[in-house]
Length: 218
Image (cartoon, rainbow, N blue to C red):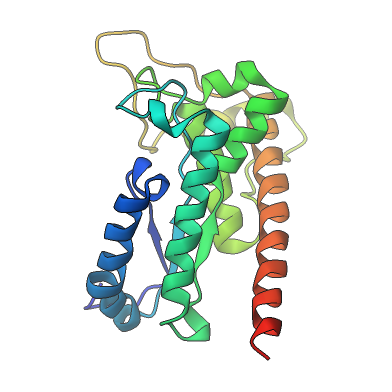
């Protein structure tokens, strides 16, 4: 980071860390003492990912509650990270937040079967479906638009495009077991739509909050 200039620095904490007050405080301290000088030097805009709550209460996460409660805690932590850095960074490097966990929750509410398919067999890493959803959310967060993946107007062409998405992509598949399925054309369209909806709603909410904060300081 100290030797080059970058546009963005995408970061995510261990999912439980921002959801737990003590671990959140440790990360806040590290961000300010260790990361802040590097971020200033490389000129990047920090991007924090709200990682999704687990599908099941694995890794001693039972006390973090339901997926909705878990996600809310993680969101609060990530927003605390961003606010802490924003107070110390110039306007050109204000933090952004990628609401991946909120996209997962929207799918959990409107399509529970799809939500189940967003996870790897370990119940917390993303499946290919979850990986694509996260990629779409990040694209919206970084570039304020969705990835131009489909739209050829020809089902055969779209199928080829979807297949090519994974040819040089990093994805996790189960060891010694059948691979998890890749998203279909319709699922790619659905996941992209969810990402757009959640990001637009979240960015609007964040803008309102920041505007209120600025006005309160006048």
